[in-house]
Length: 277
Image (cartoon, rainbow, N blue to C red; front, top):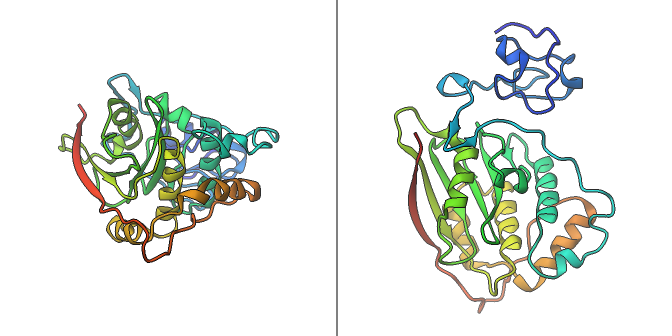
């Protein structure tokens, strides 16, 4: 692969052949896309090779491409803590959380805008990934791919019985399609139900808490599940913790209940295969 010619003006991460440099089989340089880092070998970032020839594909009218991610919320969007302290978390709040986590994750993909992903237009990932999903009718879960086990995705869900809905399956296909090994029928999804929420409005808080745990070195899901069972999150202070994180612009691990009599939950797991053509 040769050196770039400075012709790429991409606003995304140069992961598909929409990128002029990738299409011409050359690396991006500091002259491309205003000098931002990308995944086409430029600016010290190793080039990724797209599986299956690197062509964009469409699965059941689900676009597998790259779109420009939104910037931070307007300054007044989170001035009031009401949207965090009361009721289910909105797409705007979750989008801001994803923006912060994306900035904290090194060598990590994901944390796309949940609204963009729900519209089946998210980035198709090639490496280790963590993502928050808004699932119909109004539920939040966290998905994780370790970057090594091709075709295998873990979904962490704080509400028993939600399972793998068609809406979530479509989002997982649009996000993880390129992780399916050649010759395999589809994506093996392991839905895990670790600590379960009390009530119906805190699923977003738990999805964020799970994502932060995985981001902070808990890449091996099995020890993480045992830890969540023995030291559950303190649900009563999770909203205040999120408000504090948003105020300082940095996500941190959520507080745990360390009382010896804290209620324990034995995680339940089941697997589903999402077939792709």
